[in-house]
Length: 136
Image (cartoon, rainbow, N blue to C red; front, side, top):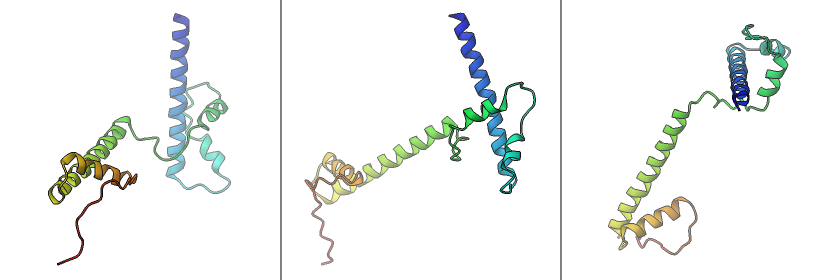
């Protein structure tokens, strides 16, 4: 059991080194423009030289990671974006429900239901506003 834990710990350390090395390579290649024949030279630079690990192993592990530009966003930023999205959604539904409650003869729950169904584009059609858009 202890040997397995040690082995897993070493694997995590090696994975961390590979990720840091690949991140350093990506940053150095983004800093300067490379020509069509210089991609290989850009990827071989940035090696810290302190590890005796084979670089081909690191390259093969990093190839399955997508370079979509979002790899540097922290988990805290993702949580914050989710909270902002939930807050925006609840404000939209709450304010819309209040407005429909005032102008229609609906309860707050009915107005909330209408706003939710409309926002999610389900559109059952079981509730429709009776507000007439014409000026009198």
